Length: 86
Image 1 (tube, rainbow, N blue to C red):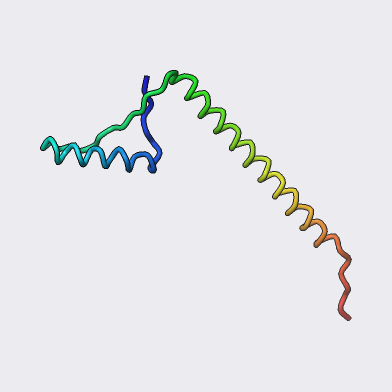
Image 2 (image 1 turned 180 degrees about the vertical axis):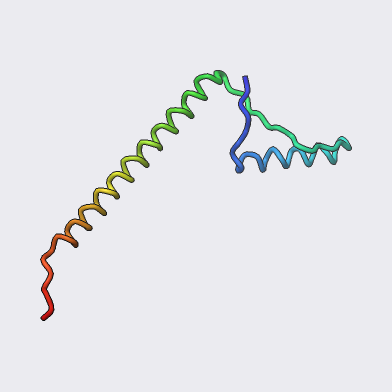
């Protein structure tokens, strides 16, 4: 089975191969699709899903920590007694 190449770093090598084939065989391509072969597409897709969930949760926890920090700073700043000017 194969999966489509979406990584721009990998696509540059595939594009180079397409350009070489165009010159060597006098052909023209407009929108080539690139694939790479894997043993099990389901396990590869499951790994990608797991990585996505992992990074989502890391971002969620980091955002929560930042919000807690901002709330604590704001509460500390606004809870201080202020001196009245006379």
